[in-house]
Length: 329
Image (cartoon, rainbow, N blue to C red; front, side, top):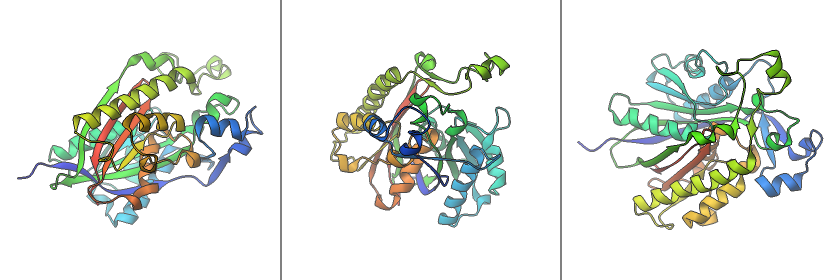
């Protein structure tokens, strides 16, 4: 019997309708379009404005998009992994609710949190479940409502993040396609540089934490940028070396969309031509857990069976890594 690999067989996505452009941001904080574009590559981002709706709303829409495209009965799904940094609530896993709402009544579900690396780490997890032979259809969803944890008076963070969701279906493959290799890393040194200070078990919510805006994302931009550039580039280069891939062998670089300069630095280190680097940061900003599947959704029609895709991500914690995957359709 041929070795089982885990291949992506379908993609789904969803972004909210409301567009927060750089021009609108100019009216909220002291910034301008030229400054934002030159430093981040971002032109606009999408925000979920519907009252009472959270990350699950985005995830459900993306999952329904996949089910419709793949003509898949949700009852066939064995497992749903919900990659998110912004769950609907601290207790009661968001993925469980999403599974029920889309009709995946035979699936078990849970949440996975590794900041901006959540979807990447989820790919490894989904693959392991498939390779075990116990599960045939694993739905990995990456979704975040970043607008719920951003201070729109803080120009250091409000220009970067947006809301969105994407998902991928993983199934067994016997042709040697799908996930080939991974290098995943983490380092607790990053805890101080990218975080939400309050709302957890160390500092529960209080009148004081709300007044001090400690429930919003704090980022030491320069430190995070430095670690992200070296981390993402390092593992992406290593995974190519380990699999004897030249820059010509790589068909597509699927990099986390945090900053255009980080993406460019990673591509440069890999010596991958600009035409092979997938970019949509200008449209959505950093959607955290959703960036990688949104890239797959936006460029799905460009992929050919057997294409070599290198995924790379970096997130708070710090967490980072690279995955080598062969496209299956």
